[in-house]
Image (cartoon, rainbow, N blue to C red; front, side, top):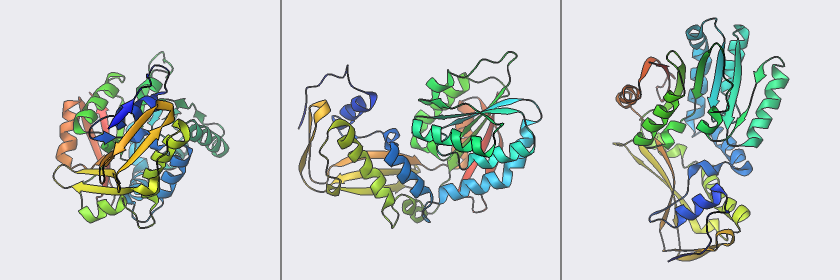
Amino acid sequence: MISATKTTTALSAFAQDVQKGLSSSPKYLLSKYFYDAEGDRLFQKIMELPEYYLTRCEEEILQTYSANLADYLGNQPFDLIELGAGDGLKTRVLLEHFQQRKLQFRYFPVDISRNILMHLQETLHQQWPTLSVIPLEGEYFTALKKLPVNDPPIRKVVLFLGSTIGNMSLTDSEAFLQQLRAQLAPGDLVLVGFDLKKKPELILAAYNDSAGVTRAFNHNHLLRINRELGGNFQPENFQHWPLYHPVTGHTKSYLLSTIAQRVYIEALELQVDFAAWEAIDMELSKKFDQAEIELLAQQTHLQVLMYFKDQKEYFTDVLFVVE
């Protein structure tokens, strides 16, 4: 049973999305709201875990192939735009190499987290005082509209690193790349990270670490609802449960209500009843094969220039050019 009386007109986007997700059947919460200050801190810890291979694999790729990427950029000025910049740790590998090559570029980190952007700008300024860093806060495409108009136009190079594209369904990732492509010009470049299909045990361990950090990361979503919206979730009554489907490549993360319980969220005047073992869908993390990536490129009018892979071929950063 769900009871909701609060209108959505005066509510934040976070509140509206929580209300919609917990009023749906099956229930869900949007993964983009993992990243408040505590979520940022926990995700930094996740990236350092031995089970979480994704970050190490991509760092290896960027360390190994920065020179190759610089070769594609040539000597003309460009704008380097990173969607979901986070702490910028991996990107610094590219920035350092581009600085050494004396490439002419401005760096536009895009993120929904003001905390992360301010910290990133400060640390980059300390390391490279002459580097032009222009943070853009907000959702990806809203932020992209804030980019300065260049006359004459200069090349855009968009980074979409990590495995964020895997947090979308194939339909949504196609729509995302089409929308991105619409804001770019022929000859612009896009570098996208894809986590590749592999041994299921390796994938599941990355989302269910022995230290319980990923569990805490998911529970923090409930605690954020408590903090910001006056909820009374008790995270200990929700079990973190990831699943991997080797055909679709979908890794799904759920929180399972271990008991029948009722949760109240004051800001929404929302009462939510959970049956024992009812699930909240928390996140999708899709794993790809090369055929899916090729099809995605074909459907979005992007041409694959290069697959950059780590030695174990767990992960790939794919360089596309806009047709």
